[in-house]
Length: 404
Image (cartoon, rainbow, N blue to C red; front, side, top):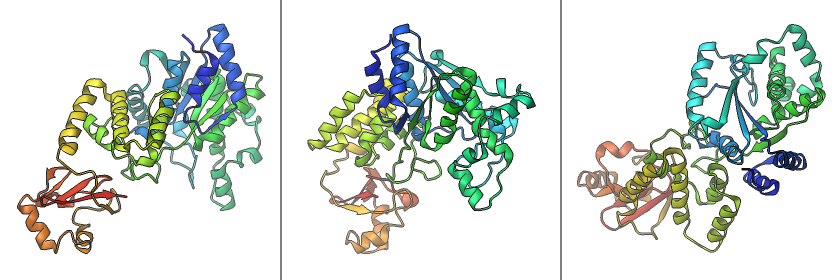
């Protein structure tokens, strides 16, 4: 059953970077509400990177919220466009994927997106269904709906053109093909990251040209990873994967920088905006961010693994990290989180008078006198890469918390 249009709009607006445009969206919601007819929500996926993390899931979570509001979700796997390669954000043309790789990636993608979306309420389409059937005459007519000047407005094309880096004519067709997907399924709303602005707005342009009602474009912001600086990326090691074990996911959420707690609530959960506003008030009143992050970890881990697995992960976290009598008020040490190992920070420990020498430190390790988060460190563990908020204990009374 649909909520009133104004309340739907409030939920849809949560965490969004930009909506083009809100008046049209409200009108669509009102028409949908009065006619009890769901809107068609579109997401296109170019199956070139099948491992999904919470950064990728930002758009999927927003779609899930609209799915829960009663709207119809259509996921378009770009098996046809994937053979060309989306040039978005690339300094040169992307190498086209083979049919075999496209199919394998698409299968992996589908397995992962249903950890977020309701499979029974989601339609999966492959754009080869219609794009492979277009005649050359139809392709020429499609190309006639825009101009070279318009295509060159796209940042990546503009940069390549100005730098005299070759642009294949076939690359100009990518935004047109993505736009044609919207025409084919009569999309009411299309979602994507801010890096997809040009392609999604092209859908509105093509629909208008063909006399159809224009889709609403919703752009979601990029989510910073555990380092709090760079966007979440597997290559940077600052990611939380949707397929990671519950205890790993729980621990990683607890490593989210305090400054990003509200952003993670907005982009990585389905919590109602009113609930998030209350969380924000609690932080402003001085509540311990760690307690609120515990709630965040419970919510996110439950979303991907269920309540039972979440409770087991929470118990593991409490046993391994919280119940080791680590004091709250301990000194912090700034290091390059995710890059430096225990061995790398020995000079810092010496400089700050935590230890006298490397040999003393290694001797303490061999005597079981050094631990990280309450777990005894062995000589073989000294190449362990240190993460945000991890606590090193030397002897009985010396504690150091590592922060970025």
